[in-house]
Image (cartoon, rainbow, N blue to C red; front, side):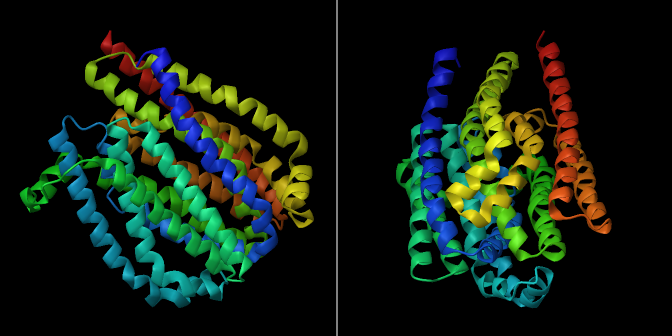
Length: 419
């Protein structure tokens, strides 16, 4: 993709992401006054459980859609991913049977009431992933942007409405589920593609899984472990050792300081993945695309980080309410993590593109062990949450630097092979 075309696509994606992220920022002061930190904690734990399973609902085969060789192969992947999504969604009806386990794990009796909806959440995760990547394959960036905006409007609008009528954590969870449905409907409406599912069978599934075996066998495990470590276990440690209120403050802080990062990086990463896939299929050097991506991320990251370092507590207290000032201090402590996410997130698909998913998974396991280990050490030393979070952030950033260097070696090696 030429420079102008690249930045035109980026701006198309960015505009949708800007709107989809601005909406929750406008609604946030309302939500923080309608919901208690403990209710945000219940919502965060629910999303952690749903995400942990939902992210692998389609066997991660959805990421093979943009890089598949032709339309027939892409449709085979869509069919296989849908079958896997349905199977995993049906299996997840066992979650309510373990309501006592989750209630005790998070010290949150209210969480058990929502486990019956986990199959719906998982199905929506899988289907949205498939549809997003099918649309991405056809480079309909405007459709992807519109889908994100629709989800944001529905999620925040219904959360505010349900909060106003006193639904508590239910309002946050049901608002999110409705937003998933909205995103699915938008993408289905604009797909404009007919699938002849009568021509698909068990052989199609076997062939597709064999062809892209690293996605369900390696990348799925990687994605599952990522959510397991960075949400499921992390939230458990926070709620168990520091309390649900601390988790609610941390989870909301994390959501809103990551929003600008997601705004930029999701736009950049979608384009990076599609263009890198095309470049590799055509035997073109990936270096120019990598440079554009990193430069774009850096341009947005520096001013954002400076504002957080200087004014985060004051901003949180003024905008979200006085009780949220401590959340601003938490935001300052995780600045190293946020900066590295700005750089790493847009190019995190490099191991997939370079067929290095096994090594990426091993890297990740080492990182999770170090970061969560640092947090557990902090609790054993009797540190408060602020000090524990500081150590966690430093260890996380150091690990991400080593991960970034590995990406660099992969791209360098690929470029050398092209000659």
